[in-house]
Every structure is written in structure tokens, then in C-alpha cells.
Length: 176
Image (cartoon, rainbow, N blue to C red):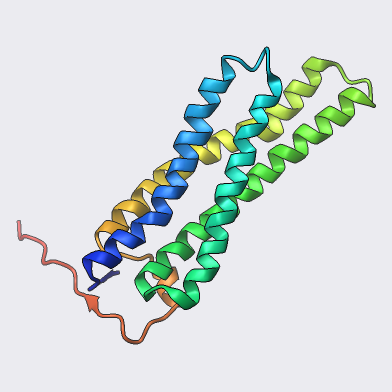
């Protein structure tokens, strides 16, 4: 659905999506590649990636809650869209941290081989997070485009109705 909103609201509605995409691309893709080169010497540097991500996702969730009473309706709705996807990604990161913790416990106290631990962590933690990152980059890029075009998903409009929002009818399709 498309709505009549001001240019300032369009600009502000893009902020949560840009922040989330920065986390996904800058932190989870680019920093992983950069730190991956030196992880053999400094393996604890890899812990920076989920730590930074938890901080950014926590900020998005906090800001989305705050947006409900503070921001214009259109901007608030885009924070809610981003918060919903942030919760999904937080679940995946929690799964990664849990599998890494279980792997460490298995290696340290359970006598598991290092290769078995890496297989456990990679298969149940890293691989699902990587797949989720790729899907969320696509979905959030689309959401960023929709924020620029003054569009909202139907589920957001149904969940957060605004009686004063002015809906814009779709452009007429050219006849063939």
C-alpha cells in the first residue's frame, strides 16, 4: 500500500533499513572476511561480529519501541518492520552462540575432537546465520526501496492502523 507522506518522513523511514543493512553487509559479510584472514592468530576477534550485531539489533528494537509514541505513523511503521526482522536475526544469532557454547563445552569437558566441534558449530550455527544474512539482505533491500516509494506491507497497516493516513491509489497501468 502506498501513502502520501512528506519527504522528511521518507528520509526518516529509510534509517532503520539502512542501519539493519549496514549490520548485515558491513558487519556480517565484510568484517567476517576481514577478520577471517587473521582469525588463526587471534580467534577471539571473531567474537566481535556477533557482539557488534547484538548491539545494533538491540538498538533497533529499543528504537522501534520508542518510535511507537514519538515518530510519525509512517516512520514508526518502518521501524516496526525492521524490528520484526531483527527479532528473526537475533534468534539465529542466539542459535549460533548456543552452538558455539555447546561446542566449547563438548571440546573442553566432553572430549570431543576439534573437527567434530567445528562441524557442529558450522552446521548448526554458522550456516543458518549465513543463509539468514543472505535472505535478509534481499528482503531489507526491498524494504528500503519501499520506504523510499512510500509503501508499507499490508500486515503493518493492519497491525498499526492510522485513521489519518492518506492512501494513494496505484498508478494506472499502461494499456497494451
